[in-house]
Image (tube, rainbow, N blue to C red; front, top):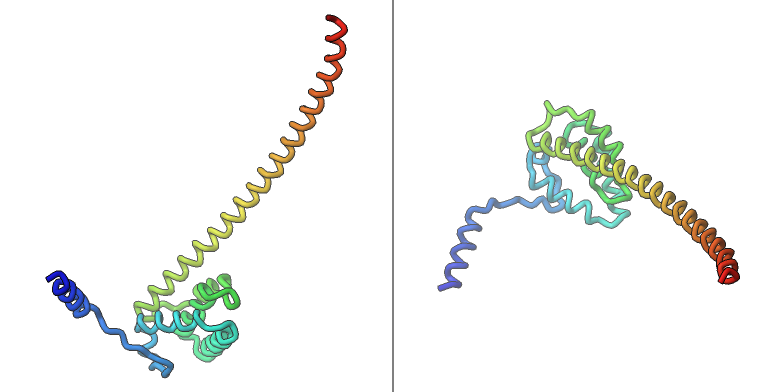
Amino acid sequence: MRNLLWILVIAGLSACHSTNVKHQGRPVPAEARGGDEAYWLEEWYRVVALPEDQLLLAFKTRERDFARSANPETRLRLVLLLAEGPQPVRDQKRALELLKGFDARQASDSTRALAALLKQVIEEQRWSIDRIAELNKDVEASRSRVEELELQLQELTSIEQHIQQRELPDSRTEQ
């Protein structure tokens, strides 16, 4: 009975789940690329999993596509790789510059949403990086101050020991 219940739950959930069309290696029409969120995700996961040489080749291809046609979709494909891609292609400063030239009027709703999200993520990451650098400076300043104080403490301890050594022989002679 319990197994039947699980089968019914899974069957009910699978009936509610939308079916995604996979674009496996074949060119996808431009109109499907812009508004197809499944395409964006599938392409993203495919590209970030590439070995470094193929990743650099995909990056160069995206740059050429953008140079040929600076429409919102080609711009966003390049920005996505620059903003969130692996280290060899990551350049968030350039990605932010490309996002500033983004024409939202020509883009689909999903493209505009992704552009806004990427802009927010880049700005937050840049703020975090700046804040971490600030905190690191503070930590270094604190660390150097602690070292100075430790040196002063050692000097004071040494002076105190010298004073005690001078007083000990005198106090013995008084007794």
